[in-house]
Length: 344
Image (cartoon, rainbow, N blue to C red; front, side):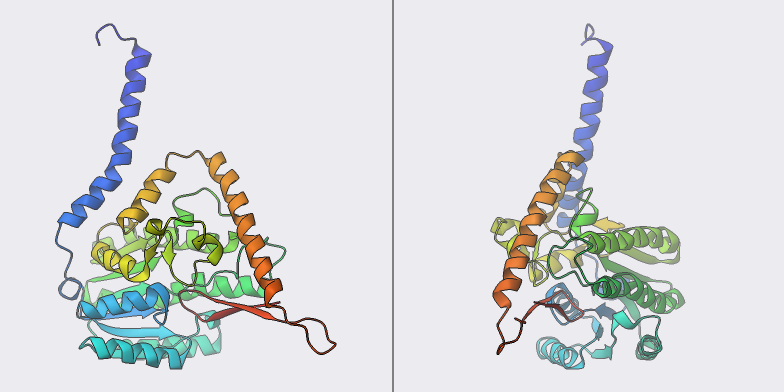
Protein backbone atom coordinates (compact mmCIF):
# COMPACT_ATOMS: atom_id res chain seq x y z
CA UNK A 1 0.00 0.00 0.00
CA UNK A 2 2.97 2.34 0.49
CA UNK A 3 3.51 2.46 -3.27
CA UNK A 4 -0.19 2.90 -4.10
CA UNK A 5 -1.01 6.20 -5.81
CA UNK A 6 -2.96 8.83 -3.92
CA UNK A 7 -5.96 8.59 -6.26
CA UNK A 8 -6.27 4.86 -5.59
CA UNK A 9 -6.19 5.33 -1.83
CA UNK A 10 -8.73 8.15 -2.09
CA UNK A 11 -11.12 6.04 -4.17
CA UNK A 12 -10.70 3.10 -1.80
CA UNK A 13 -11.59 5.30 1.16
CA UNK A 14 -14.63 6.69 -0.62
CA UNK A 15 -15.75 3.17 -1.50
CA UNK A 16 -15.35 2.05 2.11
CA UNK A 17 -17.43 4.98 3.34
CA UNK A 18 -20.13 4.23 0.74
CA UNK A 19 -20.29 0.54 1.70
CA UNK A 20 -20.42 1.44 5.40
CA UNK A 21 -23.34 3.80 4.74
CA UNK A 22 -25.21 1.08 2.86
CA UNK A 23 -24.58 -1.42 5.66
CA UNK A 24 -25.83 0.99 8.33
CA UNK A 25 -29.51 0.46 7.45
CA UNK A 26 -29.57 -3.36 7.75
CA UNK A 27 -27.34 -3.22 10.84
CA UNK A 28 -29.70 -0.74 12.50
CA UNK A 29 -32.62 -3.00 11.62
CA UNK A 30 -30.80 -6.02 13.07
CA UNK A 31 -30.07 -4.11 16.27
CA UNK A 32 -33.76 -3.27 16.63
CA UNK A 33 -34.78 -6.89 16.07
CA UNK A 34 -32.44 -7.97 18.87
CA UNK A 35 -33.68 -5.22 21.19
CA UNK A 36 -36.86 -5.61 23.22
CA UNK A 37 -39.60 -3.43 21.72
CA UNK A 38 -40.85 -0.44 23.68
CA UNK A 39 -43.79 -0.93 25.98
CA UNK A 40 -45.99 1.64 24.25
CA UNK A 41 -48.48 1.77 27.07
CA UNK A 42 -45.82 2.43 29.74
CA UNK A 43 -43.69 4.78 27.62
CA UNK A 44 -46.43 6.93 26.14
CA UNK A 45 -49.87 6.35 27.61
CA UNK A 46 -52.89 4.10 27.63
CA UNK A 47 -54.83 5.63 24.69
CA UNK A 48 -54.05 5.88 20.98
CA UNK A 49 -55.78 7.77 18.16
CA UNK A 50 -55.85 6.01 14.77
CA UNK A 51 -57.15 7.61 11.57
CA UNK A 52 -58.51 5.46 8.76
CA UNK A 53 -58.83 2.31 10.93
CA UNK A 54 -61.55 0.45 9.02
CA UNK A 55 -59.41 -1.30 6.37
CA UNK A 56 -55.87 -1.99 5.23
CA UNK A 57 -52.94 -0.82 7.32
CA UNK A 58 -55.13 1.30 9.57
CA UNK A 59 -57.26 -1.66 10.68
CA UNK A 60 -54.22 -3.86 11.19
CA UNK A 61 -52.47 -1.16 13.21
CA UNK A 62 -55.54 -0.62 15.39
CA UNK A 63 -55.68 -4.38 16.04
CA UNK A 64 -51.95 -4.49 16.84
CA UNK A 65 -52.17 -1.58 19.28
CA UNK A 66 -55.18 -3.19 20.97
CA UNK A 67 -53.20 -6.43 21.25
CA UNK A 68 -50.53 -4.45 23.06
CA UNK A 69 -53.13 -3.20 25.54
CA UNK A 70 -53.83 0.32 24.26
CA UNK A 71 -57.32 1.76 24.30
CA UNK A 72 -58.34 3.37 21.02
CA UNK A 73 -59.99 6.46 19.59
CA UNK A 74 -60.88 5.58 16.00
CA UNK A 75 -61.48 8.24 13.31
CA UNK A 76 -63.14 7.55 9.97
CA UNK A 77 -65.83 9.02 7.75
CA UNK A 78 -68.21 6.03 7.84
CA UNK A 79 -70.08 5.46 11.11
CA UNK A 80 -71.14 1.90 10.22
CA UNK A 81 -67.57 0.87 9.35
CA UNK A 82 -66.34 2.40 12.59
CA UNK A 83 -68.88 0.45 14.63
CA UNK A 84 -67.96 -2.81 12.86
CA UNK A 85 -64.25 -2.23 13.46
CA UNK A 86 -64.85 -1.27 17.09
CA UNK A 87 -66.89 -4.44 17.68
CA UNK A 88 -64.23 -6.61 16.00
CA UNK A 89 -61.48 -5.13 18.19
CA UNK A 90 -63.42 -5.48 21.44
CA UNK A 91 -64.32 -9.07 20.57
CA UNK A 92 -60.62 -9.96 20.47
CA UNK A 93 -59.05 -7.62 23.03
CA UNK A 94 -60.08 -6.29 26.44
CA UNK A 95 -59.68 -2.61 25.59
CA UNK A 96 -61.91 0.44 25.42
CA UNK A 97 -62.77 1.94 22.03
CA UNK A 98 -64.19 5.36 21.19
CA UNK A 99 -65.26 6.34 17.66
CA UNK A 100 -65.42 9.75 16.03
CA UNK A 101 -66.97 10.25 12.59
CA UNK A 102 -64.61 12.60 10.78
CA UNK A 103 -64.45 13.20 7.03
CA UNK A 104 -60.94 14.56 6.52
CA UNK A 105 -61.92 15.96 3.13
CA UNK A 106 -64.06 18.51 5.00
CA UNK A 107 -61.24 20.14 6.97
CA UNK A 108 -61.35 23.94 7.05
CA UNK A 109 -65.15 23.85 6.60
CA UNK A 110 -67.88 24.25 9.24
CA UNK A 111 -68.55 20.47 9.14
CA UNK A 112 -64.86 19.73 9.55
CA UNK A 113 -64.51 22.17 12.44
CA UNK A 114 -67.44 20.48 14.19
CA UNK A 115 -65.82 17.06 13.74
CA UNK A 116 -62.50 18.29 15.16
CA UNK A 117 -64.43 19.71 18.13
CA UNK A 118 -65.93 16.24 18.71
CA UNK A 119 -62.44 14.74 18.54
CA UNK A 120 -61.17 17.13 21.20
CA UNK A 121 -64.15 16.24 23.40
CA UNK A 122 -63.48 12.51 22.92
CA UNK A 123 -59.85 12.98 24.01
CA UNK A 124 -60.72 15.03 27.08
CA UNK A 125 -59.30 13.45 30.25
CA UNK A 126 -57.63 10.54 28.43
CA UNK A 127 -54.09 9.35 29.05
CA UNK A 128 -53.41 9.94 25.35
CA UNK A 129 -49.98 8.78 24.25
CA UNK A 130 -50.02 7.84 20.58
CA UNK A 131 -51.37 9.16 17.28
CA UNK A 132 -51.21 7.10 14.08
CA UNK A 133 -51.99 9.20 10.99
CA UNK A 134 -52.83 6.46 8.53
CA UNK A 135 -55.74 7.91 6.55
CA UNK A 136 -54.88 8.68 2.94
CA UNK A 137 -56.38 8.34 -0.53
CA UNK A 138 -54.81 7.80 -3.93
CA UNK A 139 -56.02 8.45 -7.47
CA UNK A 140 -58.00 5.60 -9.08
CA UNK A 141 -55.05 4.19 -11.02
CA UNK A 142 -52.14 5.75 -12.87
CA UNK A 143 -53.19 8.90 -14.75
CA UNK A 144 -51.61 11.91 -16.38
CA UNK A 145 -52.31 15.12 -14.51
CA UNK A 146 -54.51 16.52 -17.29
CA UNK A 147 -56.65 13.34 -17.42
CA UNK A 148 -57.96 13.32 -13.86
CA UNK A 149 -60.83 15.27 -12.38
CA UNK A 150 -59.23 18.16 -10.49
CA UNK A 151 -61.79 17.75 -7.71
CA UNK A 152 -60.29 14.35 -6.96
CA UNK A 153 -56.90 15.93 -6.51
CA UNK A 154 -58.36 18.63 -4.27
CA UNK A 155 -59.99 15.96 -2.10
CA UNK A 156 -56.73 14.01 -1.97
CA UNK A 157 -54.79 17.09 -0.88
CA UNK A 158 -57.39 17.91 1.78
CA UNK A 159 -57.18 14.39 3.26
CA UNK A 160 -53.47 13.62 2.85
CA UNK A 161 -52.18 17.08 3.84
CA UNK A 162 -54.75 19.28 5.54
CA UNK A 163 -56.55 16.51 7.40
CA UNK A 164 -53.34 14.98 8.74
CA UNK A 165 -52.07 18.40 9.81
CA UNK A 166 -55.28 19.40 11.58
CA UNK A 167 -55.63 16.09 13.46
CA UNK A 168 -51.99 16.34 14.57
CA UNK A 169 -52.52 19.92 15.78
CA UNK A 170 -55.59 18.78 17.74
CA UNK A 171 -53.74 15.91 19.46
CA UNK A 172 -50.45 17.66 20.30
CA UNK A 173 -51.78 19.80 23.20
CA UNK A 174 -52.87 16.64 25.06
CA UNK A 175 -49.36 15.19 24.71
CA UNK A 176 -47.68 18.45 25.72
CA UNK A 177 -49.75 18.59 28.89
CA UNK A 178 -48.37 15.19 29.89
CA UNK A 179 -44.83 15.73 28.56
CA UNK A 180 -44.76 12.53 26.52
CA UNK A 181 -46.25 10.96 23.42
CA UNK A 182 -45.56 9.59 19.96
CA UNK A 183 -46.87 10.52 16.53
CA UNK A 184 -46.59 8.07 13.63
CA UNK A 185 -47.25 9.37 10.12
CA UNK A 186 -47.66 6.67 7.49
CA UNK A 187 -45.88 7.61 4.28
CA UNK A 188 -44.93 5.98 1.00
CA UNK A 189 -41.85 4.40 -0.51
CA UNK A 190 -42.31 6.81 -3.41
CA UNK A 191 -40.88 9.59 -1.22
CA UNK A 192 -37.65 7.95 -0.03
CA UNK A 193 -36.67 5.32 -2.60
CA UNK A 194 -37.13 6.93 -6.00
CA UNK A 195 -36.56 10.42 -7.43
CA UNK A 196 -39.93 10.56 -9.23
CA UNK A 197 -43.28 8.78 -9.25
CA UNK A 198 -44.92 9.73 -12.57
CA UNK A 199 -48.66 9.22 -13.15
CA UNK A 200 -49.14 9.14 -9.37
CA UNK A 201 -47.66 12.61 -9.13
CA UNK A 202 -50.08 14.35 -6.76
CA UNK A 203 -50.27 11.38 -4.38
CA UNK A 204 -46.48 11.06 -4.08
CA UNK A 205 -46.20 14.83 -3.67
CA UNK A 206 -48.66 14.78 -0.75
CA UNK A 207 -46.57 12.07 0.89
CA UNK A 208 -43.43 14.16 0.35
CA UNK A 209 -45.12 16.86 2.42
CA UNK A 210 -45.81 14.30 5.16
CA UNK A 211 -42.12 13.30 5.15
CA UNK A 212 -40.93 16.89 5.61
CA UNK A 213 -43.70 17.62 8.11
CA UNK A 214 -42.68 14.58 10.17
CA UNK A 215 -38.96 15.33 10.19
CA UNK A 216 -39.51 18.95 11.21
CA UNK A 217 -41.92 17.96 13.99
CA UNK A 218 -39.40 15.37 15.20
CA UNK A 219 -36.85 18.14 15.72
CA UNK A 220 -39.45 20.57 17.06
CA UNK A 221 -40.91 18.32 19.76
CA UNK A 222 -38.15 15.86 20.66
CA UNK A 223 -37.03 18.03 23.58
CA UNK A 224 -40.62 18.08 24.85
CA UNK A 225 -40.80 14.29 25.20
CA UNK A 226 -42.75 13.64 21.99
CA UNK A 227 -41.39 11.22 19.38
CA UNK A 228 -42.44 11.85 15.78
CA UNK A 229 -41.79 9.19 13.17
CA UNK A 230 -42.35 8.86 9.44
CA UNK A 231 -43.03 5.19 8.66
CA UNK A 232 -42.53 4.16 5.04
CA UNK A 233 -44.37 1.14 3.64
CA UNK A 234 -43.19 -0.13 0.28
CA UNK A 235 -45.42 -2.82 -1.24
CA UNK A 236 -48.10 -4.00 1.21
CA UNK A 237 -51.01 -6.22 0.23
CA UNK A 238 -53.93 -3.80 0.70
CA UNK A 239 -56.66 -2.55 -1.61
CA UNK A 240 -54.57 0.55 -2.31
CA UNK A 241 -52.07 -1.69 -4.14
CA UNK A 242 -53.42 -2.08 -7.65
CA UNK A 243 -53.83 -5.44 -9.39
CA UNK A 244 -51.36 -4.26 -12.03
CA UNK A 245 -48.66 -3.92 -9.38
CA UNK A 246 -49.52 -7.16 -7.59
CA UNK A 247 -49.24 -9.15 -10.82
CA UNK A 248 -45.66 -7.98 -11.41
CA UNK A 249 -44.16 -8.45 -7.93
CA UNK A 250 -42.54 -11.43 -6.27
CA UNK A 251 -44.79 -12.56 -3.38
CA UNK A 252 -42.03 -12.22 -0.79
CA UNK A 253 -41.62 -8.54 -1.75
CA UNK A 254 -45.23 -7.82 -0.74
CA UNK A 255 -45.99 -7.89 2.99
CA UNK A 256 -49.46 -8.50 4.34
CA UNK A 257 -50.96 -5.67 6.37
CA UNK A 258 -50.65 -7.69 9.59
CA UNK A 259 -47.01 -8.56 8.93
CA UNK A 260 -46.20 -4.94 8.25
CA UNK A 261 -47.93 -3.52 11.32
CA UNK A 262 -46.40 -6.08 13.70
CA UNK A 263 -42.97 -4.85 12.66
CA UNK A 264 -44.04 -1.20 12.41
CA UNK A 265 -45.22 -1.20 16.04
CA UNK A 266 -41.72 -2.30 17.13
CA UNK A 267 -40.22 0.75 15.43
CA UNK A 268 -42.40 3.37 17.14
CA UNK A 269 -40.20 5.84 18.99
CA UNK A 270 -36.97 4.70 17.34
CA UNK A 271 -35.85 7.61 15.18
CA UNK A 272 -37.56 9.98 12.76
CA UNK A 273 -37.68 7.60 9.77
CA UNK A 274 -38.14 3.87 9.41
CA UNK A 275 -38.92 1.26 6.79
CA UNK A 276 -40.40 -1.66 8.76
CA UNK A 277 -39.81 -5.23 7.63
CA UNK A 278 -36.73 -7.05 6.29
CA UNK A 279 -38.02 -7.43 2.71
CA UNK A 280 -39.18 -3.81 2.67
CA UNK A 281 -35.82 -2.59 3.96
CA UNK A 282 -34.04 -4.71 1.34
CA UNK A 283 -36.03 -2.97 -1.38
CA UNK A 284 -35.00 0.38 0.09
CA UNK A 285 -31.33 -0.61 0.15
CA UNK A 286 -31.34 -1.99 -3.40
CA UNK A 287 -32.83 1.20 -4.82
CA UNK A 288 -29.83 3.10 -3.52
CA UNK A 289 -27.61 1.39 -6.12
CA UNK A 290 -29.71 2.63 -9.06
CA UNK A 291 -29.00 6.05 -10.61
CA UNK A 292 -31.83 8.58 -10.85
CA UNK A 293 -32.06 8.46 -14.65
CA UNK A 294 -32.60 4.70 -14.52
CA UNK A 295 -35.32 5.09 -11.87
CA UNK A 296 -37.07 7.69 -14.05
CA UNK A 297 -36.81 5.51 -17.17
CA UNK A 298 -38.18 2.45 -15.38
CA UNK A 299 -40.94 4.23 -13.46
CA UNK A 300 -42.55 5.96 -16.42
CA UNK A 301 -42.67 2.69 -18.35
CA UNK A 302 -43.99 0.68 -15.41
CA UNK A 303 -46.66 3.24 -14.58
CA UNK A 304 -47.75 3.51 -18.19
CA UNK A 305 -48.43 -0.23 -17.93
CA UNK A 306 -50.49 0.43 -14.81
CA UNK A 307 -52.38 3.11 -16.75
CA UNK A 308 -53.13 0.66 -19.55
CA UNK A 309 -54.49 -1.89 -17.06
CA UNK A 310 -56.63 0.77 -15.39
CA UNK A 311 -58.07 1.96 -18.70
CA UNK A 312 -58.77 -1.63 -19.76
CA UNK A 313 -60.57 -2.21 -16.47
CA UNK A 314 -62.69 0.88 -17.02
CA UNK A 315 -63.69 -0.31 -20.47
CA UNK A 316 -64.53 -3.77 -19.12
CA UNK A 317 -66.73 -2.19 -16.44
CA UNK A 318 -68.79 -0.23 -18.94
CA UNK A 319 -72.25 -1.70 -19.46
CA UNK A 320 -74.49 -0.45 -22.28
CA UNK A 321 -77.82 1.02 -21.34
CA UNK A 322 -81.10 0.75 -23.22
CA UNK A 323 -80.21 2.77 -26.27
CA UNK A 324 -78.25 5.23 -24.17
CA UNK A 325 -74.53 5.85 -24.07
CA UNK A 326 -72.49 3.27 -22.10
CA UNK A 327 -72.04 3.95 -18.44
CA UNK A 328 -70.21 2.21 -15.63
CA UNK A 329 -68.02 2.60 -12.60
CA UNK A 330 -64.76 1.26 -11.32
CA UNK A 331 -64.47 1.54 -7.57
CA UNK A 332 -61.22 1.21 -5.64
CA UNK A 333 -60.69 1.66 -1.95
CA UNK A 334 -57.55 2.90 -0.25
CA UNK A 335 -56.27 2.19 3.24
CA UNK A 336 -58.95 4.44 4.63
CA UNK A 337 -61.17 7.31 3.81
CA UNK A 338 -63.82 5.69 1.67
CA UNK A 339 -64.41 4.49 -1.86
CA UNK A 340 -62.84 6.40 -4.67
CA UNK A 341 -65.27 6.22 -7.57
CA UNK A 342 -64.16 6.71 -11.14
CA UNK A 343 -66.90 7.08 -13.73
CA UNK A 344 -66.60 4.80 -16.73
